[in-house]
Amino acid sequence: MNNICYSSCLTLSTHPRIVCQAMHTNNMERNCFVPAIAVHGGAWAIPQADTEASCQGVQRAVRAGYKVLEDGGTAVDAVEQAVRVLEDDPVFDAGTGSVLNYDGDVEMDAIIMEGKELKCGAVACVNNIKNPISLARKVMEQTDHTLLVGHGANKFANEMGIEKVPTSDLVTEDARKTWEEYRKFKKTVDVFFSSRTDAGHDTVGCVAVDRLGNVACATSTGGISAKKVGRVGDSPIIGSGAYCDNAYGAVSTTGHGENIMKVTLARTIISYMEHLGLSAKEAADKAIAFMSKRVGGVGGAIVVSSSGQLAKSFNSERMAWAFASNNSVRYGIDPGDDIDGGAV
Ligand code: GLY
Image (tube, rainbow, N blue to C red):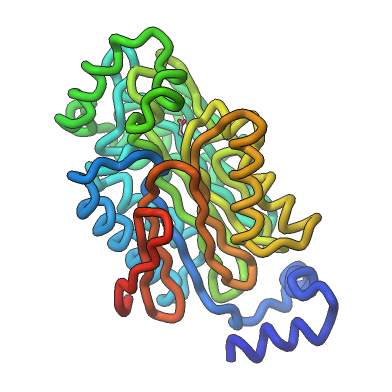
């Protein structure tokens, strides 16, 4: 059924995704796409001690998101759900487990986007929120804005009735130890992403395509340890930390935010798919290589094409990732990994 539908798109035009998109626009949607979802738990030199927990964590999240898609949920529902699971997992730098800023506080960034109308919601520098991704979704769906920051974002959370949690609920022992070590450095960002490849503890994200062929992406992070108070990274910036368009696919990125922003990594990947006709994998590899060459950036990305092709790419030492489609899970953490995670 799924393949038949996609094949029928292929017979309609030399640009199948555009035809499918046109069908959506005309409300002629059919329940005919293969749901697919990918998550990441951050691109950095993940210590050996965190390997098992990171691999388990990304698999748990991808299963939760896939179940939403299988139950007929939207891509937006799925990416939000998967990222909530990652935010609640203390091994990852988002929600619970977020790293601390220079003053020892938690300031979190998150974004969510959908590919049909290109609606997007994001928050930056928020604190005392257990699941910033759900606050970002409220910005997308309940406001006329795209990005709320700091005090205003927290005020909006109160208005939406989003529960506040004490900072101590979000802070792990690991995050505190890293902060104590890294706040000695004057230029956190430089130290972290050049001389110290083990630094980071970076970001979570998810991309998905649902049965209707709608794509979505979500990214959430505590940022980088001992960052300046008020520093905003790439994650909540549309086109940098995430981007999607039903005509091409969805992207979530991770890594050194300052460099990711310089090359608008997520939009660049979609642009390569759009203008060069590259596959999700080719586009991600090319954009990461460009970021490395142009600005010396370190990071990674996950991509789903609108036809359900899943891809990941990273030039950091490691990146925990997991894919789910056709009721099976694959995952990895080291370059070259492609491990069978069994049935969803
Ligand atoms: N990529 C996450 C950050 O730099 O904040």
